[in-house]
Every structure is written in structure tokens, then in C-alpha cells.
Image 1 (cartoon, helix red, strand yellow):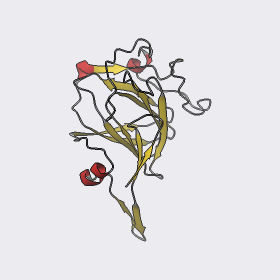
Image 2: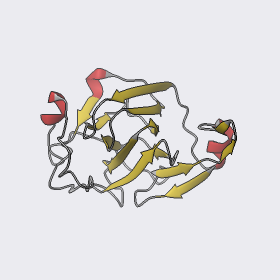
Image 3: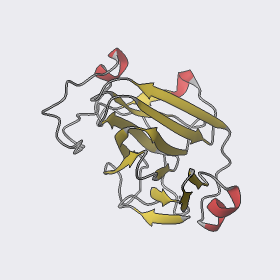
Image 4: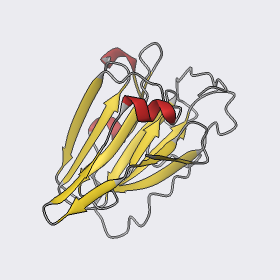
Length: 190
């Protein structure tokens, strides 16, 4: 496995070797030992799977407040998405900045987000299956969100001109980055 740095400390693109032959292919998507060797020591406790039927579906930007914050290891197992992390950790050299990665069934990449990130994605194809691991359990009362189109963040979601955007009512009503109630503090070890 290989860890690729992004412009946000602690956010990584993960690539795993894929072994194929005439029958198909095989790859490890998670190995506690190999992740520890990469410096990712989170103890994942929950796996989630979402399905999005239509290209242009947005999910996010979501986070959970402490003590229910979650680190995530995400991947797209069918279709293609653009996945975004926004640094909400006060004191971080990347506070208020975003980074993104295209994840697809073809490139088989994964994206690791430490605690203190807002996370979201947009589907670039129809029929998307998105799978992710969390290192903390979901807690509804700790939910937080930021608008995907917040002008202060200025996230580049790619060309949106050819798609009809599909958002939940909750995501449409999400507050701005300036109104964000996140209380995360950056620590060097993140």
C-alpha cells in the first residue's frame, strides 16, 4: 500500500496493489498492519455503504462534533465520484482549506480523512456505490454540515454545467463555513 500526501495535513490518498489475471483481480482494501506501517493507527468500528442513482448527486459536507468526531477511510466501488475534505481544525496550517480526489471503480483509490474534517462527495456517474469505514459510531445529535457551494471555501467540484444537482433538504439548508459550529483543535500528530 502507498500513502500519498495532500495539501491538508493528515488527509491521504491510499493506493493498494491490485493483482489480476484471466479470472479478474484481487486487492487488499484494509490491513490494520499495513495501515499502521503507513502511520494510520485509527481503530475502525463501523462500515457504511451508500447508493446514489443519478449523476450530480451531492452528499455533504458533513461532520460530527467531538466527542463523536469520525476519521474515515472512503472509496467508490461502483461508478465515479469527486470526494472532498475541508479542514475544520482550528490552528491547522490548512484550516478552512479543501482538498479533493476522484475515486472510482477503475482507479480503486481510497481517501483517508482524520477527525476534524467536513466530508462530502458528488457523483460523476449514475449508479454509484460508496463505501467507508469510520473510527467512531454515528451520533445524530452531533451532526454538523456546511454548504457545498460556500463562497468562502470556493470548492472546485469540476464542471457542473452538464448535470442537474441533486441534494437533500438538509444539505440545501446547511449553514455557511463562517457559521460552522465545529470545535476541532489541530494537533501535530493528526
